[in-house]
Length: 211
Image 1: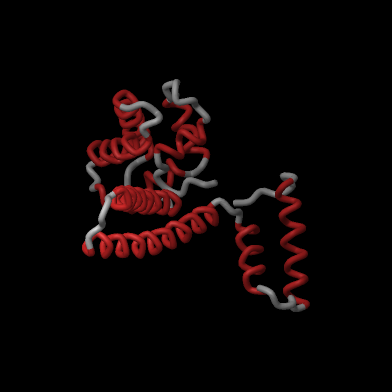
Image 2 (image 1 turned 90 degrees about the vertical axis):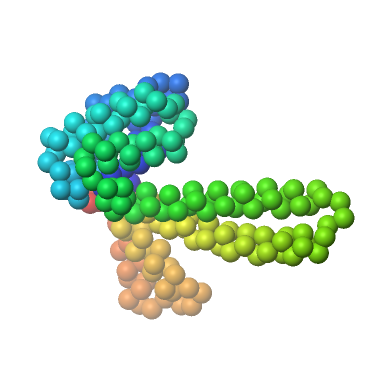
């Protein structure tokens, strides 16, 4: 997975494989960012020199991990973005514009998850009431309809997130399968399927590098 611009704190934790009981190594986190393209592209997106960005990141990471535990990912993420904004002089909207597509999807999914949780709790409380009024019943109908809509959004976002983890070859193969559907593949499609499958085998054995 490539971190396109400014990676989220949760991505740092995943990539660094550090347990929640440990403090992160700032040098290691920066190295992860640089190796995955997030550092240089983030600096370029924000119009900041890389050496200045290095200093900003070091201060932001040290500050936020000094205030919050690693398990507090949402708080860390918010703190991280606030610090980058403050130290760089860039607005929060500029920071968000330089996030990767994956980070944006994760933020939207988190918002949807929170809404679903709140509505499910409200519905549970209404179900515990004895002698529901007509207003309560109407509210329950509204909640159930809204939950259906949110769960559709949740599924869509999860599918899009899964797609971001695919290699270009996997994405093309998946699109080709969708194109064929339940019908019969044409000779050209069969040929392309074989090419893509062979390429996936090569990639899995590390014979070629996917950019």
